[in-house]
Image (cartoon, rainbow, N blue to C red):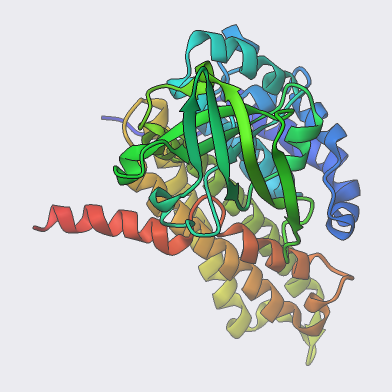
Length: 390
């Protein structure tokens, strides 16, 4: 069996095109987005426009998408994150906003709800977490009750990314996971499509985050939201399984984004270490600084190998839950370490707004928890590990 770690010529061209887009479109506005905490949606539409079509990277061609292998989406998210992590995060938001419909939705649901996302005219949100159910997602208490020909949804959701955009834009929707049977635990969770203009959706709070500014985490109340019976996705009671299947894909591409941010922190620090002189020589000549940077470089490469192996498995239709969990846990650890080493090396100036180092660190601190806290991912790996050694 032969192995190749090379990108294809087409993937190399994709990498160059994403780098060009990031430098041309994102670099000039990244400071403004961080300060104003508002994502410019014209960038979303540019990412959706041909020839990029990145918002449709998960969506089959027959529903308006431009489907790409998971490895290609990893390339996109990694390169975007080197300049603006929130732009990278939006690609994976686009992913988990559609994957449940792609994996379990019927033909009518796919034809209606996927094309606006592919074209950048709408946004699909993913609503699982609640104030009482974070890592223990099966403990959600949001309720969906079938009354006549309608599902009536009541509950409170937290960390619902960009809910205000889903409510404001026609063609947007929220995937809501709710209990349809409280006696069955995880097997009592079902998944629903709630159009953004549905009455009874109320944003209670837009929660400011220390980093990843421009990404609005929101607390949303669903109060007697009525949706048609046919807005149930797949089978009743299968929602939790659908959620985990979707997260396997998007956690993989998210891990590539972590690598991109770690790369940005490493490059900025190496450049600084070469230019900054103390006691007659550049910082780069001090072993005390060279070794931490070398460790970060090694670990970035290790995280990339873990991530792209998981993507390789995904593209071959092989289950990769454990591989993706390990990649995300490690990539998150490396990302935070890279930004901390950057702060240590820069010293006081690294904590000022003059340089992007403090922003890198803030972004890393909050982003590591996206789609599952690192320790939850380690728990997934540990369960598999101890099965191997009964």
